Image (cartoon, rainbow, N blue to C red; front, side, top):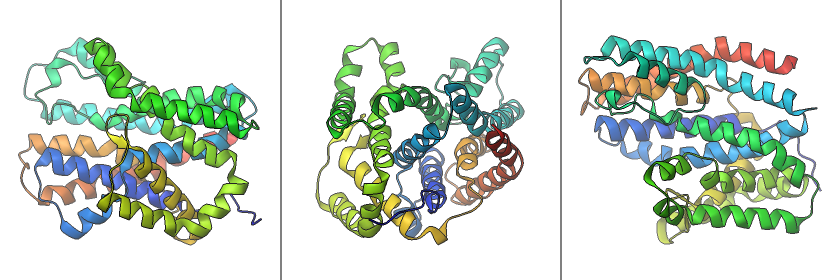
Length: 336
């Protein structure tokens, strides 16, 4: 069986495309822009949240295996997420203060800032609902989900690593079932609890655990994905054009997510030479909604040039963040 170097892939390229898909989707929706036909069709192929969550599950499984303790693993995750996030939150608040035209509730703004910089990114105080699209940086809700996964993944790894397929199958099927039942669960919960449930790890755990399964059995599965990546992509296209799917976690689909993940991972190991060395995907993710909201306030709604402003400014901020704070964080992480 072919031995594949786990590090030689083009995953950074697909993370970039997924971050751009999120940027394009949020720009179109919030700035009321016309869709660019060819570009929009291409970029929408790489559905952002499923790509980010599955690739996170796939890569984090290896990170856990390479850590000597929970503390060491936690420090690595901290340096990967928080330094760049804190700078992005500072920029977000500065832009908001410069553009916000209404009275500011300073205690609530303080709590909002803390929430954005920790694990409560999903909360927006009522006084900010008339700023921009009504949520200064709504895309950050996934940070809270990722942090929850990072925490629980360590213990799931201890439970499932080197275990039999039967146990893995039981965990995966349970996670899928819980995700599928999300609308029913949210419907019977009180409104506030239901909203919190929707931004918890629980409805999305199936994405992480399916990709972690591939990482666990990488020696057997990666050669297959590498050889037959095109089969998964063809089935995905056929599915999207002609077939229905099983909705999981309210917004996402089971077979669509699995086929996309398998196709992209297989392709990335088949063509590692197209990998982007400077990965700015995280920066794009944490900055783009700050730019979108600023443009809404400045009156760019309905102006198709706004899309390219969002792309250019977000990529610039992301690149600056990556080559400064990001590289410092990586050095700190590798030094642990």
